[in-house]
Image (cartoon, rainbow, N blue to C red; front, side, top):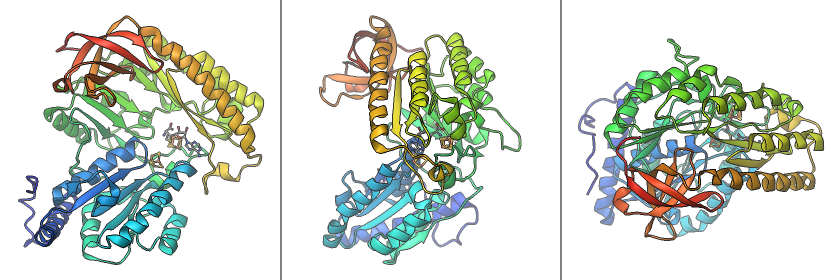
Length: 488
Ligand code: SAH
Ligand code: SF4
Ligand code: F3S
């Protein structure tokens, strides 16, 4: 049977609504008709698979795609080759993200020959690159639908068109200033959810393609964000992750400006929400006001992801990051002073054009000084159209690889030491899932984002429990439950 839907007000006999959200619900109803026909012919519901290939923002978008497919009546399918409709939500931040998409398509091509009714759709950041769309048009004719990041809110409408047509449908926009609210979404976890606070990025770090594929910075109205979070809380969500490429510049472009720190304070008031996380923070925009709010908050998690990218002021300048090594270290000092138990994580790029051995040593120096809980380390990847791609002195692969390995060793050694400092303490853990390897264990997360495995029952998932952290195994703890907590 179909999931109960909220499509009653979307009578197909009525004219196409003008207001965008209603318009998209209308198209969900159109898709539902197609699904009914499919079921009559095949005696089963059609199956859809959403493959997320990008960052948390893409993951949230994927939940919205899944929500629309569920409203249309599709059943969820995990294996892409067994689905009737597959959609890849792509990323293009580094070349390997890009290559993975072609890899998936290569594998699906023979599957689609055997199951010609199968529809394949591509969306997300990579589709915003004109060369990619050209390549798909030329060499991947079996793709049915291509759209980008700016018109993702039109997915129901595009899906309706795709289901009815055998042509390749391409609808990629250059930009948008529109934010469409109140579309459905199908959350991956019942107890935690991402919440977009802003879209796009205005920073133009010289290596980064995101501003080109995600467009200019746009913040959601605080009221719309609060409404969504209240609704999530009523639905049993206890942890939210506020999402944006640079949450610290939230609200600057609103008619009635509101800072990120002010937004956090309003969210703190919402009953039912126990944990608030956010990402990503750009160091140049992290205000004293925000540090103060973090210091006083009961709900903001003791974790901050603060990408440094490089420890060399010279390279930071070429990266257009707009802070120096010293400013970054000072920021870390202020944060630690205000929130002593804060866990810090970061992103680091190795092999940016012109990076000398001395520059790289500066990065190692920052890693040793800050002592991150963990760090995502990336080899610089040249992205066409970004200023860095045209810079002189691209670094030879061998040199980069050698630096990358040295950095990784340093990061991992420090991280193992830093993570172990809580051994023996009793700390609140949000139980998230049954352990992958041992079903008698649950896997949960500390406020500082570290994982903890402890004996527990499935019914505890979604609750916050006190766990004694008995042993640290590098990047996670083994623990034992103390007592069920009701308050943080
Ligand atoms: N908005 C976030 C990051 C988004 S991309 C921020 O400003 O921190 C996530 C990470 O990918 C970046 O922090 C950066 O470390 C890495 N990255 C982005 N472009 C890259 C490139 N061209 N090569 C290698 N790593 C890159
Ligand atoms: Fe890319 Fe910089 Fe924007 Fe982050 S802040 S998305 S790294 S341009
Ligand atoms: Fe990738 Fe787009 Fe996110 S390029 S990192 S999916 S914003």
